Amino acid sequence: MVGVIIMSHGNLASTLVATAETIIGKIEDIKCIAIRHGDNLEDIRKSTSLAIRDLDTGMGVLILTDMFGGTPSNIGLSFLEDDRVEVLTGVNLSMLLKLSSHRQDKNLTQLAGILKTSGQNSIVIASEMLKGRQGGG
Image (tube, rainbow, N blue to C red; front, side):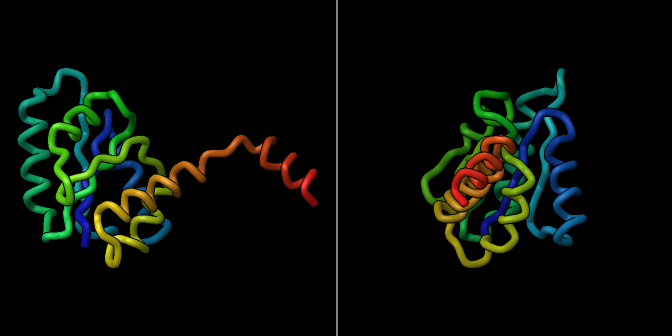
């Protein structure tokens, strides 16, 4: 199974996991890393390294971060390694719900692609979607 780390500013990561777990139940082999103003970034890097070590069972680790270019993403990117560690930014609830149904049977690259698509597809402007349905039948 692909290990998963969610890194975010503040409590977003743990709140997303808690919310997903109220919908689908316990999510195994997942760690949350919160980054707050004033945190020692070297300590965060060490925590991330330990989490990768703990979660990697041979299928790799996917690091989900809240936004590209932010501190969580930049730290995650420093661990990027082909077929071992991948980073996917813009984590949302849809991604976490999809995660549980695909991490057993997909490799790291496949899982990252599935979650990216799921996350993107869950972002809609409701009026555009409704207009499309009304116009299309």
